[in-house]
Length: 315
Image (tube, rainbow, N blue to C red; front, side):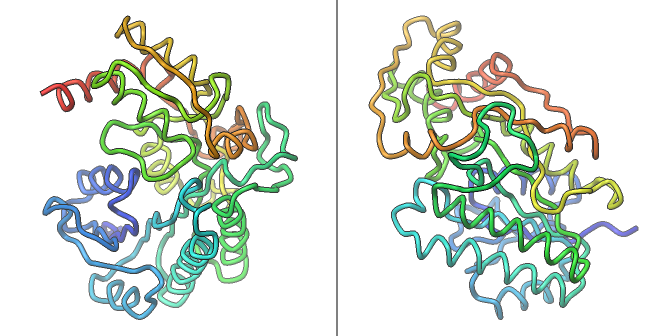
């Protein structure tokens, strides 16, 4: 089997930048095309500007670069999405439909669609949330992702599109600052610990949320896309878990390495969003179907985050 030619939308995002780099290490620089609405730097080459709603340009790029797989990461996230619900719905849903239509028409090999714990809502059991539970999301971002899951399942069943999806928890990584999510505090807190010695958290100290280190998120994504098609039993978003913690717990872990670090709390509108989400996830389907297993817990993540950020921030 020949190597895939991969297109990544939203390649400048928190996950997109790391995933692009990892896939290029795996398949070669020219095998992975990064796309986004802006270009950050030359390391993104090969790169194409792409507004995901421009279906004609998307089609041209897929044809010109002989694309066989798409990782569709372009989206507006939870906190930012609440400022412009109509735009968020338009980009998140119609962008996905453009990808799915093209995958059907061009008979692409695979599509990856990132879903999220934001699909869960206040009616969802909060502890050890099962794979199949009622979804009543409280944000337009969660609504768009829950609907996107249904579209993915539909295109697989109706047209045979090999679309695969994960419900990402909050993602923590040192490679870039996050871009408008409700779990952003778990990245910001490490930066603040090293540069300011203090962090004012926008969530309450006891708000427990599912989280995952970036290395595990990338591993899960690639493992899912590499799994045999017959092993993929769920097409609407696999539950995915690694750890759950509160702001107070991550602060305590940081103080094991930076004793003088302090945290204060000033919950804002994101607290209401977080309170509607689940606290922990049952990801047994992912573990059983295609062998998912995380490698990082909170202590290991903290050591690795501080190891990478310290030389970057304390120059």
